[in-house]
Every structure is written in structure tokens, then in C-alpha cells.
Length: 153
Image (cartoon, rainbow, N blue to C red):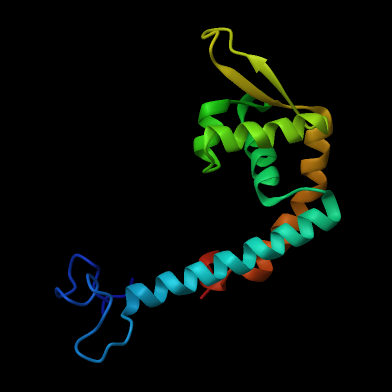
């Protein structure tokens, strides 16, 4: 945020709270930024769905689960923590994990400490599919995210 821009806490009432500046009825900077971010997200997600699907047989959520598992210690994640990390409900994650498991990309295993807990574990096939999809994922993001989000101005 530049020195000339007011943060929401510094903005006068009626600008950021209502989404309007003065009496003009035009969106303020907060609403404009939100709309730009939402449009960028929608375009990037659509491109990711298309390219990951066509090239690797993965959806965005599939890739995100494989990515989180690949980044984690021991290539595993407790199911409830994974659901939170990828912004899915536990039931949605369960269906996604079922699908990935049918394709041999992940496995479920019990938790040693808590018998009610379930871990989702990345298989070798899942690790390979993830590694093959990473360049596609990063390329789509590089094409669709604004330079300002990537550290450029």
C-alpha cells in the first residue's frame, strides 16, 4: 500500500464500509481490488482446470491435494488438517481422496496415536503424477497472475 492510499482502518466512514466513494456511486479502491482479484482467480482456475485436466487428468483440487502431500513430511497429511489446508469440507475431501485412491495416487492409513484419525499418504504414482503436472501448474499461474503479485511492478 502506498503512502497516499488509506488503509481500511484509516479510510473515512462511508468509503470502504459502503464500497462507495462520496456521492458518485463509483466503486472504491477496496471493491475494485476485490473484483480484480476475483477475476484473476477465476481466470487462473479455469485455465488450471483445462490444462491440468487435458495434460494430466487432474483437477485443481486434485493437484492441490497432491501438492500439499508432496510438500509435507513423510508425504502424508492428517485428513482433517488436509481438508482445512485445501479449503474443502471433510466430506468433499473424502470424495476427492476416494477418486485419487482409485487411480492409485494416494492411500489412506490409520493414525498410530489416534485410532479415529486417518492419514492421506502420497503414493509413488501420485508423486510422479504431481511432478509431471508441476510445470503445467506453474506455467498457468505465471501466465495468469499479475506481475505485481509475483514481486514485479
